[in-house]
Image (cartoon, rainbow, N blue to C red; front, top):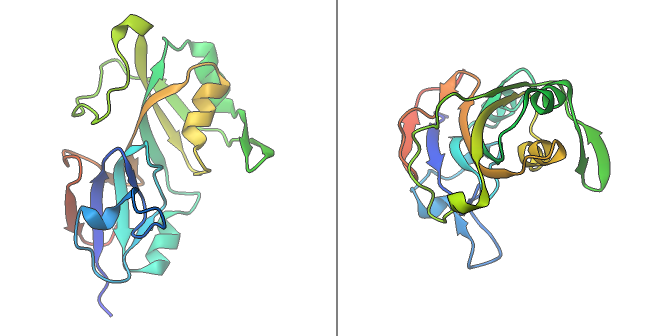
Length: 187
């Protein structure tokens, strides 16, 4: 069997799945006609955007989700984060996963000097009257449910916008929201 592989820029408001019991939810199949058997490599929640890998190869899917693959996110947060808060995230912070306490693995966190040049989000985040925001880069090797959002909240800086820009060596690049590109294997 010849497998097919895709990268896409998942827009805000879509689930990282192809079917949903709730008819009002938007799913990936509305954006592109993927071949039968296509599965997302990991997930982005409905309110997250950015790079999503998809493949018809289950083995490759498992390999790309392994803990040796970095996932990089650009995160707009509420407030101006300080070095001490970023250091807490780097060391690991306690978050809740399915009602249990979980200590995140060490990760890389840095403040971005410039605001990323992303298209405006479909749903407005908020306006400047509510105070300053800043953007940080977070690189993790795990992917717990809503982990990045929980990490920034744990240090007092709630996430306003979350964009995955990289999985291992695969970058979002200049794909536009909703755009899909067929590629060779990811590894």
